[in-house]
Each structure stands twice: as C-alpha cells, then as structure tokens.
Length: 121
Image (cartoon, rainbow, N blue to C red):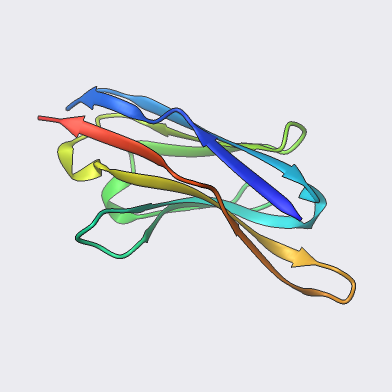
C-alpha cells in the first residue's frame, strides 16, 4: 500500500508563489510516476504536472513556465513550485502516484487528500 500526504496550500495574492509538497509512504518502490492534479467545483479534475521515475516531466499548457515539478526519490517526496499565480489557479490540488504493485502485478494508483490553493485578485 502507498499513502500520500500533501501540504503547502493556502491563500496567496495574484502574482505570488506557493510550494506544494507530497510525502509518499508505504510500498514506495511500486511508484513509477508522480504528479499533481487540480479540481474546482466547476471543472473535472485535470492534470497540472507529472514527473516520471527518471525525471521526465509534462505540464498543462497554462502552467508551463510558471510551475515546476520536482521529485526527491530518496525522500519519497514530490514538489510543485508555483510562481506567478493567478486566480484561475485556485483549486484543490491533489498528489497522485501511479505504478505497478504485486506480484500478482496490478496497476497502482493512489491519491492524496488534497490541499486547497486560493489565489486572490
């Protein structure tokens, strides 16, 4: 089993920065990719950024150049540095881990409890 715990959300003014952290525990050797998703009451949960085991990254177009995802595999942590925040970034941010657990091998997908980010104009 893998557990994820996020931290670092809060209230920030437009143009400000926040850093989200996600700590993974349990069978962390089963994890391949880790990422951040976000959700608002008006929208479905969407991918913000994802990072592979080897460090490859992918970002939602609207956060490219503003957000940076990083991973410390030794500490089983993933981070999301968010700069130049705007009110459209307001959402609950969820940490996600995917991989393969077993044997018998089966897909692994785990979500954190979410952390609220509010950007005021």
